[in-house]
Image (cartoon, rainbow, N blue to C red):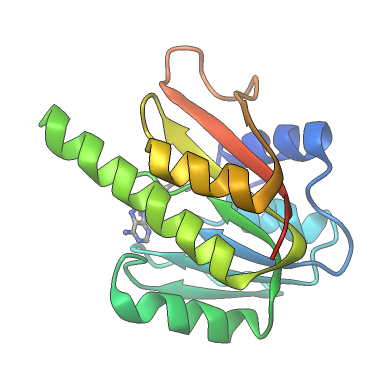
Length: 177
Ligand code: SAM
């Protein structure tokens, strides 16, 4: 079994888009409790470096950082934990909501943007970036940057993602470097 229901979303995304290949170096943003890291390793990833605000129980093959990904020092720490350029950057980051719509929207947009900038900094040419986004969650600037720097950018809502949830996933493949 996997630690999270979210694990099944990554399984479905991988079945559809062929994201995970043997030996890959994978970054996992918003990794707690560790379901996506488990799926990536089970499907052959060589190394996973994850980060979350919450502590994550150890997973063999993964380095799991207990940090706020939006803090300036997080990107460097995660790069060090990766140990080299990434093949795949996964983001299932979901901010704690405040209930104040405008604030929540800004937070979501900022998280997706931070994840995208990190991906474009650490990915190998040919690499893939996958991010959970919410309705209206990725700004036009971020989407434009991704469309320029990746061969293909698509949106997909896996069946395991509940219909009533506003989340969907952005899949950017073929990083141009
Ligand atoms: N993919 C995970 C799995 O399968 O186990 C589930 C991830 S959960 C949907 C989203 C996570 O994003 C939460 O654990 C939350 O703590 C984390 N998160 C939200 N904002 C964060 C931030 N600024 N830095 C690090 N983690 C953050």
